[in-house]
Length: 406
Image 1 (cartoon, helix red, strand yellow):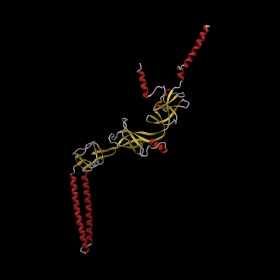
Image 2: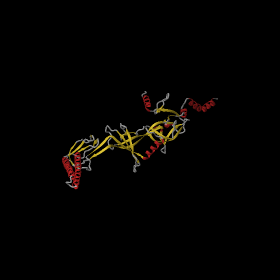
Image 3: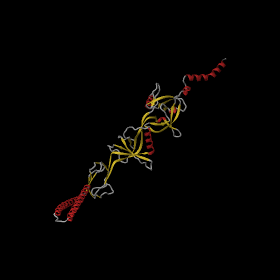
Image 4: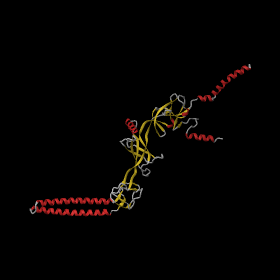
């Protein structure tokens, strides 16, 4: 009897062991439990659509100062690289010959004035003599013609005097605009000629300053269509606001406004030029500096966005997100995601409001598998009773505390 009992017990022992393990929640039960994933329920919201475009800075005004008369430079009245006001003196050209020419022209005006006065009195006397028939009508006509000729000579003398006065004024070379001066190309004692090819100095107005950027004509056309269809709306009724990024990635402190869009497409690049105006009180922006302008194109009122960590790429390069359905099973979705907004992807297609996108635990989500979805909040899983923190700063203190245990 004992051998039979021992054989029966030996045959039933594996079954009893499996049942015992199932009841105790051992490894078999754990392998069958649905893995937990963090999901974000997609809801439409209003987002500002921006575009970052490369560009360079340009002065709002630029003047190349050249002499308008010939002469020797007597004095330079500015320091290179400083800001000058419009009308302030930059150079002084030797005025001696121009002062003499002006005095000569004034004397010519005085002479012509005296001649006109004499001709006018002569005409009056001739008129009286014609009345008593002492002289002929021809004499009167000749006197009248002489007066008109002398009056014309007087006007010519006055014009010559004005020209001489202007040339004398040109010996004082002044700043045509307010701005920052560059390097002076001449020194005291140099001979300069009127309207010479080489500029004496250049002045650039840098506050405010332009930023010229280029945009693809295709993108500009798409933006206009989105505006016309109502997909995008202007942020404000004013010009679009623009932010600026330096080449090192830092942000410029002041905000600019879009001024105009060129109406001509560059045949070689297929791009159009956009111009924005920025204040530059600190002088940080210099001409021809490379920058990136972030332009507010408009507002999409019912946009769908998902965190970037929720989107992967398949073998074809398509954007894919894992979605938890109403049956708590995972299904892949191919998305249309062409631009980012901060840390999120802007979704143009493939998702709908109310979809639950997996943002945490993607490594545990397999297409068709059942999962336990936990809604995330503020970029991490919602706290659950008894659940350990798995992301961000919450996990680090727990690990640190564990490492300090004896």
